[in-house]
Image (cartoon, rainbow, N blue to C red; front, side):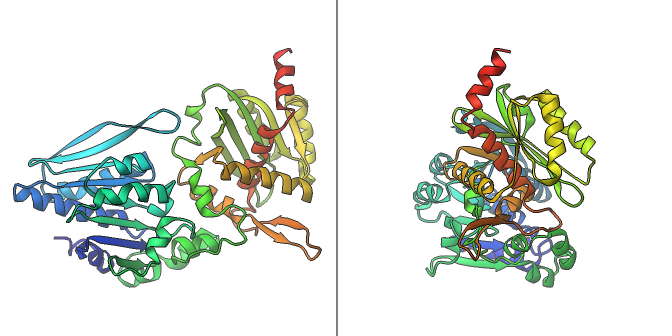
Length: 429
């Protein structure tokens, strides 16, 4: 049924009926579509025979779960002429902030059902069904999810499908993909093989547009990127991603801390806004511009101050940052705006504070933002000939870790011991 619409590498994946199947595919090669097509064929085959089966799709977040359901499962079901009921409901599970996790379901006439929802150890534990782990390398707590999940599919005959691009070596996907057990059927398709088998992509154009060799090697050529010198490994970065982070609409009106990385010419100008909720720093907005005037940078910062209750703002004062900092202090007050010189000791302090926030999971950043993820991973710690540590980020078409330093500046603003004093001073006029 699938041979007319799939590329050969996709058809091999769909037609592989192994109980345990794992695939590492390059970005933009249709790995989610192929797997949901296999699920559609399976539930339709059961329905034709008057039987029922159960599938659960666990994705990185609600948006990805919805895409897997709407663009992956429902389209082939409609194309096959299937009649189904579509349901959206409260799954009964909660995010760490207390908000409900939505579940999307498709039900067929004879009782076959597919449920799609974000993955966490609780949702992984809650079903006895065939399971599809979509982009598993990017799931938070992948080992905890695996520990909760595997007993779910222990019943004979239940199937497990896992697909992802790599995300460093510090996750369960890496262990499963590189294991030697004969019980797993493994598929590997990089961008070169996919194009050779008919996928319509311009490899050189994609590589030039990617403009980051680590990202290209990992997400298109499926290399396990060496994390030894990366200050923030991919696994650490993705463990702090959340789909409710990065949305100004989620701002609750509380105190905010802001980091500003000044940029001109080819570098980015970045504003990073954090709002503490409990002991967690939630990203509320990341403003990124390139090649804009200092006047426009001032307007963007003033807009942030007008929309958020900014308690402290730390700005890059190095070099060209002297005047923007001075001007911002004149507009918003020296108590709220602090200039930070990017000296080696200051960078070490900010980088250490930033990394600790990620390691302790005290920060939430936007889910699945490739630019932010690549930028955070770009920062490297190297040792100078004198033995002193320093931080470098190779400058490319997307700047030199501008988002990273804006984030660290915001964390630095939130971590200032003077923060309470600033708040008290502002509260008393």
